Image (cartoon, rainbow, N blue to C red; front, side):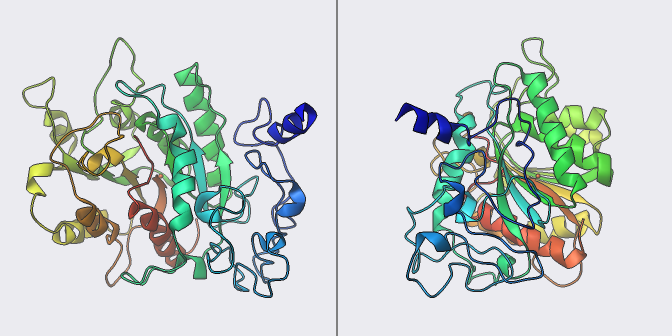
Length: 383
């Protein structure tokens, strides 16, 4: 048993790996990833983007004539009508697992880090739990018409191998991993992780795309300067981003801000930078759809990034968050935020989301894929 366990664990995360160890080109075969306990034979082969997919988990349903991907040329979450939800590798939406972002339009990436948090820890387990909960997400959203898997090649590429004992080193590992993802032309959708991780992610994205707009849903602005003498922690990422010119400050919107503060005017810094701040009290008892139409116009047709902190929701709906603040947003209001890309005309090229280039139509579909996760209350999660 011990040799078997050791062999299985060696597939989880190779020692010294960044995002993952070097693997064969993803257009030839999908093998067991660093977090897969299944032997490679149980993962179905994935063909090149131009051909028909063999179907994820098809090998696990012998005798079935219908592949779980329904003969799509794109990866599709397997239907629970064909494959039982508890079956298979625990990947995001039960999508195929790949070793890198090569060949993908969109990739789910886990960043299991919480050493930057100031109150309750536990966000390091966020990516794992989001993946488990995502087994309930189906292929289509009937209320919005979103069908991202009809036009995008999406997969789960595992977790960044963070250093839980050294926060600056973790930021370096995250930045380097995302530089590889961005270089492949893939849009990363991140499962966190405390809010510290947004800083190195944006460093990597901006190095390629230039300063980005930001739609930030949170209870806190996360623009603090330092805590206990440290400049890098979950309360400071957007101040660090401002200092490095990572944000297009005229296109930054922060929604749901609330709670007590250390300063009599806690929003002063944000206003001085040109951010639009929408306090939670301006959202109470109303739909956010009018607000999101304004945000859509503000973002324009330039690159932007979405960051959704789970404490943007009222703790009645998300009690496990590390820094709960009462009187937050409701799930219904979050759905209005998730409807942000709807409407006529073009919209800002979506460069990534924290759960943080192809043709513009693919950006629109990538946003739908990301926002489908937001509707679960899980996106660039900062518990």
